[in-house]
Length: 327
Ligand code: TXA
Ligand code: MG
Image 1: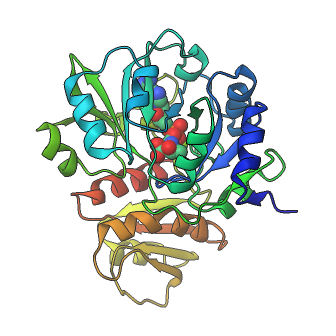
Image 2: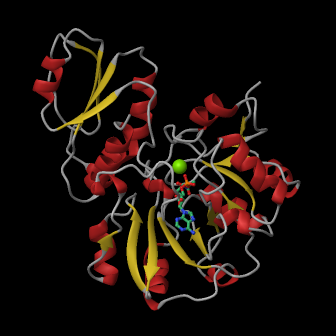
């Protein structure tokens, strides 16, 4: 029997009983539990096989609720919350003493966001606790953007996936931390840097391990979303700016192609997905993970992914594809 259901009151009951429920958000589906239940939070880490050093995002029902989670709100954090919530920005701020260490992996900061999805907001408004929710995929696998993706991963391990359709944004929230009250990007995501800079001015991206060219697999980075290999299909994946040469180099293999807008046709290609025929980066982001889920099911030898333009959401998509291509 399917564990997918639209019954919000059932989700309320399960969550109030310290059980896990996968929930829809505008970015990806999350595997949610009561932040104050040690049982639920431990179950999130176990179900995802996620290392305990990788902290969780707390999901709240309103901008005002932020005061219950964090101690100090820098001016630019307040501006960002007001400009983008509900929406795909996560703020990492000094945590209140009442926020359990298990959520924050012992750090004195906590990641918080108000999701922009009617089902998630309705659910949060009916609960008397916030929800911790990492993306609802096993550690290092592709994030889920439909209820079906979650069921495929976890049908024997959780009781319910709350149906919310396919996620409109399709890649995770942009994570912003604060150093001396100045914002800094910890993880690229569904809100573009350009949009953020319109609100708070120039903003840096925290140097990722990919940029430094060395592995951080063994240590806990500031935002472990920056772990090198992440968001990965099980099929070997390469990222390239030159599709034609990459296809030539692998023409004896079963090739899956993931392109931005290219209608390239080649007999060597076994399966192809075009992310946006109209050159629309928002559309490409919303389709990215479903495309990777589909490609991963085709018994291919290799997925050749095309680099997108390096601005707006193209930057965030390239970040995910680069991580998917690390072996
Ligand atoms: O869009 C999203 O953000 C989705 C939906 C479900 O809300 N959630 C999500 O969660 O992507 P997750 O757990 O897959 O990624 C959360 C990231 C991790 O990389 C984690 O390391 C980082 O947030 N994070 C959490 N708390 C942190 C903290 N105190 N300091 C730095 N990074 C933190
Ligand atoms: Mg994740």
